Image (cartoon, rainbow, N blue to C red):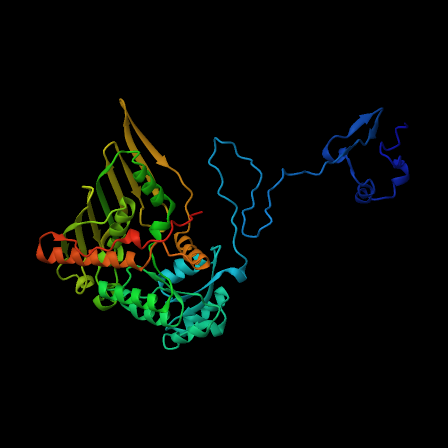
Length: 451
């Protein structure tokens, strides 16, 4: 072949292409590429020869795509067994099949956590808003695409019964308002997801449970820690007794408050101070990881005299709980110290520690146990989830499959019975026997599927 001929199937002479642009020339060569463009220009006898090579289209290994919409797509394997494996591919339901939520109350928790979280859900969607501040609600509705007709005031709240787009009412109001809006929501025929603490008293909890049972709607309390992977893993390790039987638990949940006019510092709206707001996490999580209910409680309470934050509610409370297995849990909560959220379970052959245990993110699970002359420390790395999205989607799953929630109303009632015993013990200065405990295990639904 002559040097001025292109080596391709068309045998087109380069000289005949002198008046064609480089882009046009490459286009005409079709499936071939001028290697000279990649720096592989070869000089022969003082003249340039353009070499060509075929470009192969990249082909990915086969992906398993099941026929049914609800079944998981399985991508090809690419990581070795020596690296942490990826989570399954997200499988959100089509929007028209998701459960619709009405968020009641647009305060810190709703705007900072819950509404952003619901937009990451796979089985849930935001359908409506309820607020006593029209301007704020209008702005939030525009930001998140909520229809104007799906925005309600507290006065028009009962009209939500006529809204077919709303399946669930999520109550994110001050504690003292939980009972009223749960009862009204149940009468409207909507399922209820209620923030913790469930109410102000155990009697209010019973009224809420009765109202939902009467209306034949589901009631779930938003104990997000029970849907968080690190806390669930620690519970699993305890159940397997990999560190021997648990003997002692120490837990603390503390933060610093600054606004005496906030509803959390008003007895009528909050029901109490540090205990029902943040101390409840120590109480509920300890019960959750141990899988037991306490039989006796002994408590102390204190508030700094003259501090305007604590004219109605307590600043600090600590308590011990005795469990049937012999485990003793020592818990404390404070509204006036630097933030600290942690617990440690001491076992016969080691310990399990959770830092940032009750926080929205950043959980750190570490363990230690002896091995001959060595003490082995392990940091168990796990992917975090959005705790709010996880609990919301669990409730949606319960509605779709008509099952009972993992954290039903009886779970909230039990905590209130125990908190009332804590306050009683602090007042009387002596231990209180727990005789009215709820058998929560009998009321729980199936274990949640946490992705």
